[in-house]
Image 1 (spheres, rainbow, N blue to C red):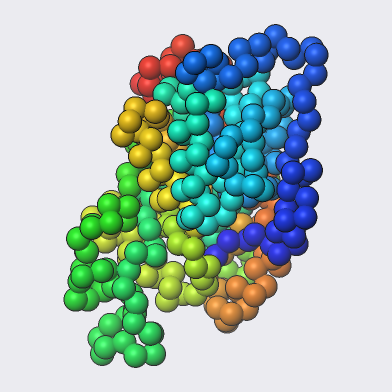
Image 2 (cartoon, rainbow, N blue to C red; image 1 turned 90 degrees about the vertical axis):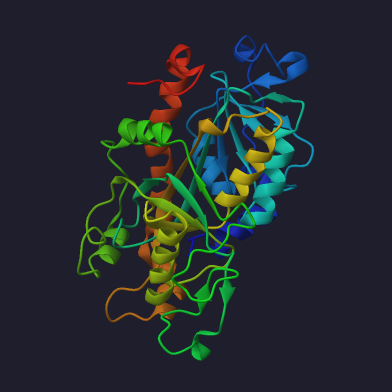
Length: 357
């Protein structure tokens, strides 16, 4: 379940270009942008921040400019340009959901306007969060990307005796079996060294919080749900269906364990990351990007299941009352920016790959 409010979506739909335009670079910035689109290979980029909808991108645009807008054929019509600053940090927005993410990343990576062969990609978005792993406002660096949507489903009211869910892997016989990975997009493992470095750089940052989120946390009787937000490491689950519930949440935990052979730990739920990674993988197959340079951070905007005594329906329908939306956006920046700045400040160390420290 993701806190992407109807109000926020309405603003985006009515004024996406206006809200997401940072204005032209000033004359004083001409030297910083003098390399333009980078010649025949395109503009080199040190860090590409990938957001999924307007507010996720705007938090970076508000803090790291000035920006030059570079239109790219094939991007979402709502977000038709990539925004790049003088440090060779760029921000792009895919549009929400698997389909938009895959289409936009393919357009970006195959565009002649950029040279992305040494680029570090940081996916930074909000997500639902498992209260046994984090809380609203927590920022989680992932090592595994798991697709929750590639399963068989039997109506939960008609499941066989002894089953605890109506979900099971495709071409399996029970919910506990690992399926053959015929789609080849069911699970991806990120570069562990990069994930660990990103976590080490950000683990001690002070995250944003507010009174509404504190009140929502207090309704949970256990930690870390009822504790202040921190930067954590755990894995993320992708699926276009927004969900809420204790039983669905348990399936998310179990499915992550099944597909990662027990190595992954589910904590955030979102829509796009497996699609984003697969598009990057296609580009990597023709040497346009380096998959060892992909990091994913997701900040909890709402709990994926109710507290004791609350219904799953109430948790879903009243998610905005949890107060996590604004702090999650801010905490994407607070947790992600240390990695961004380390890369651009120490590019000599990062140019050839993740430094060993």
